[in-house]
Length: 133
Image 1 (cartoon, rainbow, N blue to C red):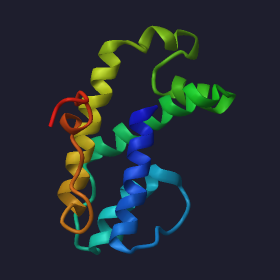
Image 2 (image 1 turned 180 degrees about the vertical axis):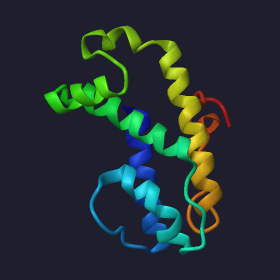
Image 3 (image 1 turned 30 degrees about the vertical axis):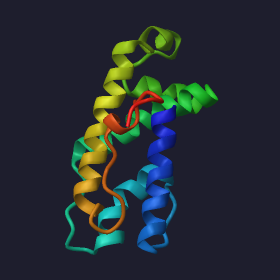
């Protein structure tokens, strides 16, 4: 859930720094997907397909964990998970997958818009002890 919150907050800040007002509905995932062209212009490449898949996957899990409503459970099932077995998937391996996938997503969007806004994050900057520089 924290990775999703970080991704949502990051994209809102990127639009703000670029002085661009996000257009249309669709939430944080749509804002990520629209960012290359919205912030850098129509000639900018789209995000990699894997980035979009990661964002939707993360959003699905976040919505299930926060809301656990029928819509969230259905989306989870559509992604190959039975909501009744969700706890079995919430493991250290999944946490590592979230970090790795979001590192890739931030690298991708950073390559597209980083020169205009914020460089993409990397988990190396997120997991420091209080006494590390």
